[in-house]
Amino acid sequence: MKKICVLTIGMFAATSMTAQVAVVKEAEKAFKSADSYAAYQKAVETITPAFSSPETDKQAQTYWIPGKAGFKLYDDLFAKKSFGQDVNLVDMGNALLDGFNYGMKALAVDTVVDAKGKVKTKYSKEIAGQIAGHENDFINAGAAFWDARDFKKAYEAFTAYLVIPENPALGKLAPQALPDSTVASIEYNRALAAWQAEMLPQAAEAFDKIMVIGYDDPQAYDYAYSVAYGMKDEPRKLRYSQTALEKFGTKDPKFLQRVVNSYIEAKDFDKATKMLNEAIASDPNNAAYYLSLGVLKEQQNDFKGAKEDYKKAVDLDATNTFNNLYYGRMLVQEYDALDQKAANMSQAEYNKYNYENMRPLLVEATKYLEKAYELDNEQTDALRYLKNIYYVLNDGDNLKRVEALLAQ
Image (cartoon, rainbow, N blue to C red; front, side):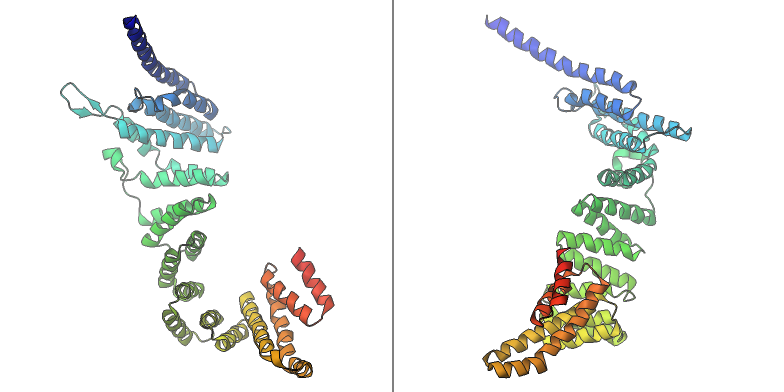
């Protein structure tokens, strides 16, 4: 009885192991007849159990069968496209990516030990040839995914293009290294794709490489800063801003402003002050520098100095939203400070003091805050200040107007 039980278990195990090999063979047939990406995906479903089976998960053939089929399907679709037939570019890109991903997995396990114990490879040359031969196709695939707004796949396609050259897994068949200018351009696309896919760490990693290589478009440094800002990564924000400032100088003052803002965030006021004073000395009519200097002084509780710098900024550039907003806000703060000082006055004294010294500040503030909102109708901070001001001034018509704008 015991022998029967043991034999039964052994036969069951052998049957199960053989079944996994059969799965691979069955899938191989399915891949050969796959003439669409949908049919290819069904074949992948067939072979998927073999990816986790102890009998087949370490065999290169298990992965190269879908990998080779992916490249073949891509080539077939490409040929149809070349002859003017209508093909799905996203399906083409998916077939190419699958060919690459399964091919790389096959390379990782492609070892055969002969009778003498020598390790050899069985599929590596063929796999490396297919991957290297399709190198440039990943650019087109990335563009197709981008147009389809599949940014994650676009990122993967651009990444594949960048890792293929000089890849040691491809041996002698690996393509030569790409020129730095090409790498920077594709890294830029890769960073943007990752950013759009909300893969911020991957986007930052790509932008890091751009910073090392160098890139001539200031917008790339803007986008990099936005990614670092979204990650709340203060060291990266400072590094990106410093790199941009070194490369582009102060022609566009925002890079210097960002460096200064990073110093302010770090409470390194001396560095920030020194940098701004030097910038103002070289460009005394740059309103952006006075705005930053006002922020710096406000952070150090020098409200009088901040107000003067904000006024200087708005005098130099009255078309800047923040110049108007910050100066208007500072007038409101000055009103609040005077109101607190007048707390112990009699009502008669307060009324006179308010009319002569305080009320004019609010009236003046409305001009700048209204201008700030006029320049940027998303500037709700200006509206909130205006709401409180018109309430204090007992200006019912303007109060209703501002409340309606806030309610939109």
